[in-house]
Length: 583
Image (cartoon, rainbow, N blue to C red):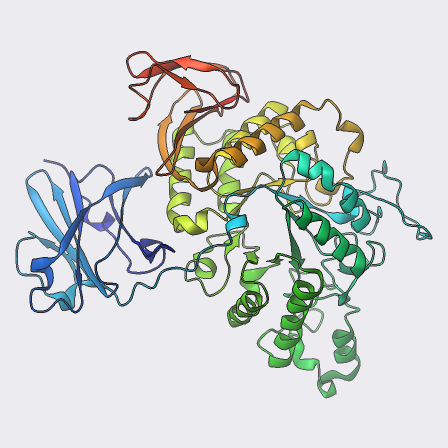
């Protein structure tokens, strides 16, 4: 007799546990204790299927999609006969059978079901599809001041020498939009399909998160015409661009803030900010930084101003999306208004949150963001590939929890990254070990989401905590760079193999020696991705999944070699930092 942890059985008729897909199918998920049930099924009827209701219900077998240390997460995807759905779950463990409905867990499943006690999906409207270009695309983050400088005639402003080590925020190196434009062939050759730039607007810092004028490109970067030329060139090369919108706070020289400070409550802009005499500076700020006063987006006039900012750059330069800074600290209804505006201007645009934690509040309902910067995943990558303070099995459980957080359509557009302008570079975090950068990037490009390269990672650049992670791009390290070749190959494979872009994720093997294997699957393609996450070479016999086990050989897309299959398994030998993509 199996022990059943009844407190582990959980379903929420909302968010990731119950949602519709863009194609009209419905996904139901259920959490149970790990390994406690031999069969789980969803019993589905219509709220209008009188008088029979559940007597005429459809029953769908559920399978374990994800699993962590303590839980199984069951899933079923089906096409409902009626979009007005009532449902419950049937669970079997040995000879015991249980039923879970909205009133709780009950022994037995044969009794008459009361439709009023079932879980409800009142009307399963198909979800809005994500922009097709954003699904699994390869992105590239640029910190403009430090990426590339292409002087224009008449440039006179003094800037730091490109080789300077003074990377603090007050030092400006003069990277500009003309430089990014010049680098488009380099980015195209790398396999990049979308670039994201940190703020471009008028400011006195190198990071420009303290914006002075949201309608003016910082002259050190160039002009509005330069941005338009960059957008046009990217689009000609089938690439997209996402700008950074800093609408949580402004800079001290933002004209409305200057007016509010001078006139106090007599200023028409006083309500645009969060003035509070109890605060050290007399107003709320981003973090504890005086030079970034917090905006009040609950104020209607303030909200309309920033909606016009977002609209302006979408319309005037045809940018493809916004990444929105400090998104969880902004009044949520503003994001709903912002999304409506974006969809009106460009239905194919992408709206990305900068949220460092669980982002379901902002993503899953579909009325705010499409995507987020997936720091939940990043922290587990750092733990396994850099510090090695979690085992391969613990890493696998963390990935399963991350995969369970959001619907598949959201997973496909999440921004996955190894580092950013706010964090140590991964190679530095790994003690300078280039092999770990290769291993982590292999995983990044084969896992769910949209892998974002932080400029220079493809060259093996290092950098400590902010601002050291913002060193100038090392253009002298491009030629013959093995790490760049590695990234090019990964991006090329992602473009060529649909399952890497939009396939489902399923765990396959997590071994003590550091070998980790997982599946990426679409209805038409099955790939087995294998990576050495450890600090020693591995050589092991790996059982293949159903669909590959009966083949004579499997092909590794990364190396181009074939591996013989013997009794449903292959012999895998990987050096530190290496991986395989088997089909």
